[in-house]
Amino acid sequence: AQSVAQPEDQVNVAEGNPLTVKCTYSVSGNPYLFWYVQYPNRGLQFLLKYITGDNLVKGSYGFEAEFNKSQTSFHLKKPSALVSDSALYFCAVRDGGSGNTGKLIFGQGTTLQVKP
Amino acid sequence: EPEVTQTPSHQVTQMGQEVILRCVPISNHLYFYWYRQILGQKVEFLVSFYNNEISEKSEIFDDQFSVERPDGSNFTLKIRSTKLEDSAMYFCASRRTGSSGANVLTFGAGSRLTVL
Image 1: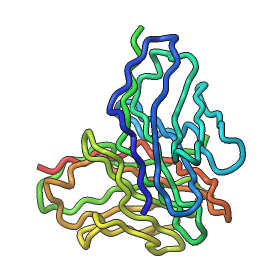
Image 2 (image 1 turned 45 degrees about the horizontal axis):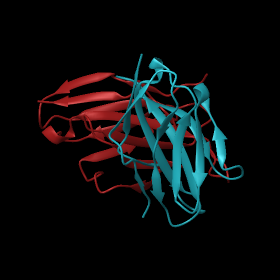
Image 3 (image 1 turned 180 degrees about the vertical axis):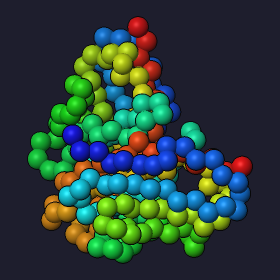
């Protein structure tokens, strides 16, 4: 069964500092990994994905994430945080095996708070 | 940019009443999903739908729930007899077909259901 863990309920960082939001996953086949962001009273917005290839993937708004197969991790990073990055971030995984429905399994979410 | 549209944005209903939540997926997408998010909790998979039938459903998706695509445009989630614990934000999502799993789920803004 697929699962995703986001060990931190909240991450606090000062504006201009680097940020990391952690994610580990478990999946039986090859993992397809995603990050989504949710602003208050809004839907989920896609940030970036890892399917294959380079372990470091770049996405929207300056975010990037690094796929680490040995540690089964897919941490979200940004070199310099902005106050406007404050939101709820979800990591998600999909089993890339054939025949699956493409459903994503989400982690519990991490609230990122960027203080001026 | 194409969007997934959900209506209503907020519905208040009495326990035991039937509720229909509507979604208009992106026009060239053929996989459809419903997720729900109870306040402050993770985003949970309910059901996936492809080729006019349910392709996968979770334990949450019991006999009280049903989905249909009545006219080739709308994708609806029906809750036959609502319970207090059905109060949540319900998200519709869609994605393109394709042999690869790279296709991203695009989410709507959600429908907030409050059961009194």
